[in-house]
Length: 251
Image 1 (cartoon, one colour):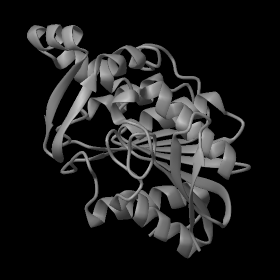
Image 2 (cartoon, rainbow, N blue to C red):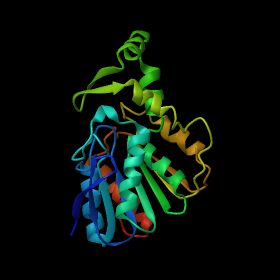
Image 3 (tube, rainbow, N blue to C red):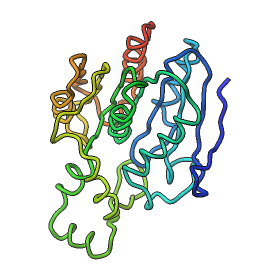
Image 4 (cartoon, helix red, strand yellow):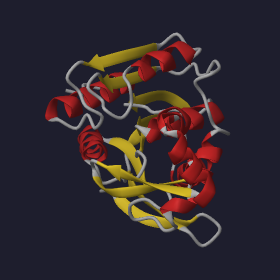
């Protein structure tokens, strides 16, 4: 039975988590930017882990989902630290990280920080460096000037209400960039990427695979797949991929 709770990260901000007990390695799902642990990828994977008797941890970063804190106070470093705090408190032993979009970036940073614990990583439309490559570099000069002048920029989203990009998010992201240098990870990595992704270019997955130093890296391109990769066939591919890394039948 999955258990849920909240933990104080040390400054009064509470982080929401949900833990499914079971056999290790513990599968850890890391959501995307402005997303949460209630999405279909996280819940389908939770149900698959339950059926397999596998442990799984889901979590919300501060400013996301059921966690406290303001979204605009966050950044890659803050949300990385949030994930580290929940993982440290709620898990022991080996981990298999599954990161969606921004969660893929955070998964890579976590794997680099704790190589002795992370035994595998699955990226779903993983978006390392997106604050620089997909936000800052895509802005018109007038947008950059406005962001620098007022400290934020409100951006429309096809997934719901507009969201706010802060100058702090952009500057913090620059402290965690990965794609311009080798990424020293040797654990198995699987990258699932739609070629119809309107948010993260599919070439990002190929570039990421080139940067990873380990040999056991595979990129799976889904020709008609979008950014969410939440169709039944996409979710089946996700469970099969996780299952293969765990030595289970993920069908």
